[in-house]
Image (cartoon, rainbow, N blue to C red):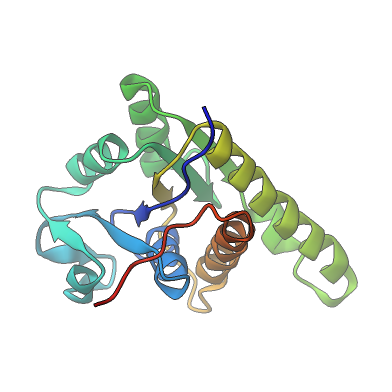
Length: 185
């Protein structure tokens, strides 16, 4: 079976990786959506702008994680802490549902973001993006669920890192004609 391409990116809308995934897809013209907790609740309070990105609000954090895994073809977990409660829930739920799942610890990549290590940082970013693209093609991921840690930092460096990795992933797929962009009438 050949890869049909990416059609949609979903997440739970939380600050950090979830929102980074949605923004990367939006910037690349890819349809977005997913399930957020009731009232579009995030660490920063309710965020009704998530509705504009196609999310629906229902349930709590746990139920939205389960629903997003279910409503996707596979989940990518981009995390600074792979053993956080949310990361464990996402991993376990993907396994329980028999859905493709891939995870990356981003803390080593973020640690390389200094003047002396910029080349290594760029190589690590590229390797991660290419790995995700290859995994998506291998598992025919049309609807991608993006998960990861909430952004705790005031500088949003982890959020920007996830967004950059996913934009590079989507660009790699687009070059091969494997991204289906939204059509506007």
